Length: 609
Image (cartoon, rainbow, N blue to C red; front, side, top):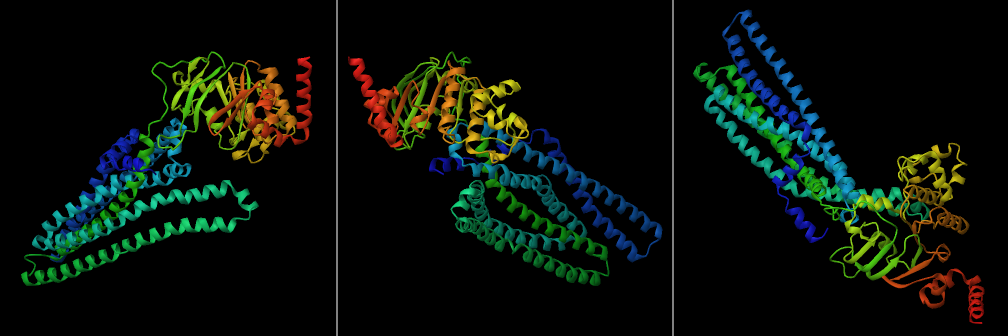
């Protein structure tokens, strides 16, 4: 994370975090208010019960009738039922509010991520976003549950118990206040030492998730290179870092229980000794057994509440970092947005790059693309070729406005792409990306990503164009065949052809294939391109390829070199005049190169005659 992003994180105050997270409570506001109200009732009743019990004990000590005992018993039973009712209602309201908040947070974050441009996603790793949607949301849910119930209950219990302790025990209750303050200081000190550790822990979850995600998604590569031991060691290190941090935190938190037990023992010993002495010396005039019993109960309630308050402090501290990370996603503004009055119709598939330069971020040392000036006519078949790192993919991402240019402009259909409604533009610029992705579901469901309303006949037609129908017909369930997550039950070439068919269903003005036929054989590649020429002649086709055979029938070919257009001409002219294209061609076509050059020379001689 950059220093600038760190400053953005630190700019979020606790008030900002509460305000942002609070917006996701929405329909659960009533439950969020009901829970503290029921908790208040529960606390008042619980503090009343020891007071009445003390009077019952005093009555029994003085000798009373069963009628009096039954009356006190009835009152206590009624209070217990009311306390149970309040506790259940508080628990239900608290659970509904907390789980509802978590659901809304996940929904709001997911919706926010869907609006992100590529540059926004670049600022968050996939694993970090997954952690924020899962672990961080769970932490905030638990903290919210504690805040609207336990964080209300504990302070109220301390206050009411202290008041009732003074009512029951008089000056002796000062002992409770002293012990409680000392215990509270100790517990807060423990929590403050734990806070930095927990903040560190949740940042390490990203690295742990990254290790898991990389290993699971790349398990075939791991096994083929026999790197299981290396991956296990990497995971062990990430997991070990978390272990030692948690161990350090728990080692500090382990003082909570002994401190609590010590404080309770001090309270018990002090109250029993001092209370018994007061009762004996005053012959029950200054204090009775019932009062001493109530005093012990109130003291215990105060200390338990103090300990609970310290634990809430730790939980909220843990969740603060999680809440901050969630807020980062919620407040992230998409780098790309629709203009004030967007254009909704793409006239044709013409493409113009007017002195375009582009860098991925303003701190980049060099331009990914520089001084690109070229013009493509609607309906042309354009090849794009170049070495690794020549920015071929970057070039086509600017056409569908996945990124905005740094300098110059890109026009589609004669209109600057920044003036279009982004959905309208992207529906007319269909891209089959280098990394083909199929989703779990049937082949039909995957194809209908291109057009949700496509008929079965249109699906078959698109698949025939993409040379996919032939292998689909071999499946027992044909177009109803279920595709596993990631398309693991089809081959790489089959996956590519399904993705091409899906793109064709959008009936785009521009079709871009980003090295999307690399896994199919040359014959199938030729058939796909011939289908494009015959059935979608008015669609501009841009084919990024590593193989010259995939672009040699193109109308013109763009040769990219280190982010610049080295040449833009017909395949024949490039073969004659462009060193980069000729070198690539010769490397891939050594056997037939001499024959082709000889034929071209002969054709040149015939024309000269």
